[in-house]
Image (tube, rainbow, N blue to C red; front, side, top):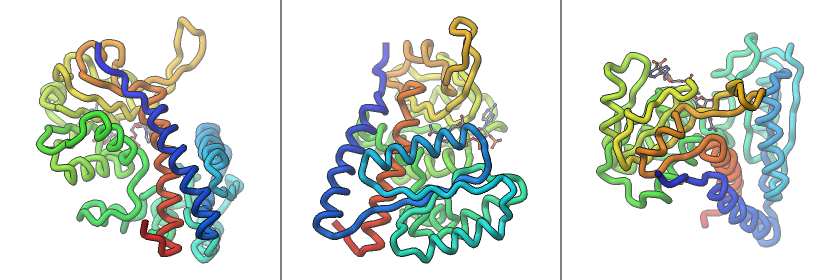
Length: 291
Ligand code: NDP
């Protein structure tokens, strides 16, 4: 039976440290880290994510300003709000909850955010900075996954890492971070041939696919470390209600892997903790505080 990597406990520890830092920034530097969270429309999953982020801010003493816009908001109106927030010196981080309604070009909105305030790390210049090893704001889910891997394995240098999924928000930045750690990185996707064989080569296997229980136990090299990024809602016949599962068949995989993140309680809490981390880092950067 493998070790269960407790992302919630790690996230709580990280947030406790950040809360202390926020207290001292307020007391010693008169700096109050602040994030603006923008939600357009009424998507229930997005509203839940935004609620969880705002709650974490409150716990850490980070100011949050919520902007909840109508589903019919135009791209121009949203861009005007971004412009306002970019020019507000009291706002250090800007997060636009994705997806946005179809009349709005999500890429245009993200790329309108000042890259130094782009706490999600999705701006094209932050993606480029990550690709060339000049990290500015790093996407939260890959950053949190890397922290868990380093906590579990220490030095990652020379390990074979397979990332299943090549999205701009998870797969690609995850691969870039692992490459920076001198892993030998393979990015797999829907066109990959013989995916099980590719996965079996992995000392580190990251699943970011969006298909419940996709990665099977016999795809995993014995002793490998498995990071399950997936968040999928499935109907559980026994429970008679929906529950969250990952992209990995956890119960079977846990018999083979050396260590594995559960869903829930693995990468999910790290994503929010890293959003807090990026917000504090953005506030310090903008105030010229280097330590
Ligand atoms: P996307 O849908 O953007 O990307 C999915 C990737 O999986 C694509 O690259 C796709 O390949 C690949 N894929 C799909 N089917 C297969 C297949 N049969 N074999 C191999 N690869 C396949 O998803 P995201 O990256 O945004 O998210 C992935 C998962 O992570 C989702 O469950 C999401 O909910 C979750 N998530 C969790 C977060 C957290 O905080 N824990 C944060 C963000 C996401 P191709 O490019 O070829 O189509």
